[in-house]
Image (cartoon, rainbow, N blue to C red; front, side, top):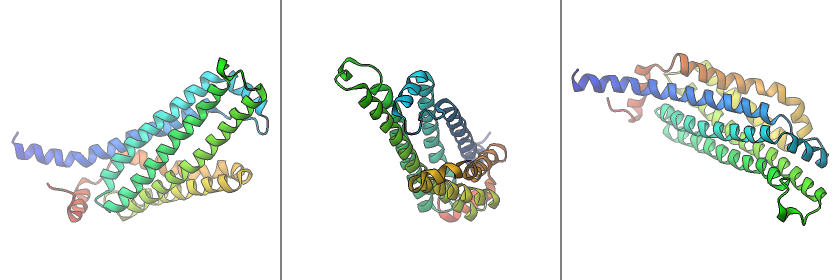
Amino acid sequence: MSAAVMMERMSEASPRITARAVGVFWLLTILAGAFAMVALDKPVVSGDAAATAANILAHEPSLRWGVAGNLIGGACYVAATLFVYVLLKPVNRDLSLLAAFFSLLGCATGALSSLFQLAPLVVLGGAQYLSVFPVAELQALAFMFLRLTAQASNIGFIFFGLHCLLIGCLILRSTFLPRIVGALMVFAGLGWLTLSFASLLSPPFASNLFPYIMVPGILGEASLTLWLLVIGVNVQRWKEQAGEAGDWRS
């Protein structure tokens, strides 16, 4: 096989490989997030620090597994973000870079949220140096850390919502991915933003909204993941758009 033929095959495979990588890492993010959601499963007992502390200690292994799931999901989302940037930068390099920036901010906020989630295990761990504090104060402190976890998660989802929204806009402007996927990603981003701001401004309203506002997010991200895993991208159109943007050399 000549070097020219090998280079041509590599050039054709590159966007396909990138698309598959996005699909794989986004799927792993979804699976890890779902596992973490089940493992964590509402350790907070509203308004009751003592009951919450007892709940945390009773489910410590599950809590640790949940935090691990969130961290793994965050790492997978970082990888997906980098591959999405490469895949969509022929559409608009600056907008794709801005989307990646928002995503990485969300991942950093998620890591901080995981730190807050582990803090109650330290506070309630019964270490000797903590014996100077009354039990009630330690329970209140653990409760506060879990409340901070929720607030940090809400802030993180603002950045993730912006990431999904910008990805949707980029897909709508692309020639190598279907517009319906772009539209669903726009709705996903708007859904996450609505849920995040509602959680920050009116938690009771957000609790009632939660089951319904999850739908656009799940549909958008699932459609993009499945499309990239099963179909991929139109390589020829990707190369044409990348050539017009000056990002491709065949």
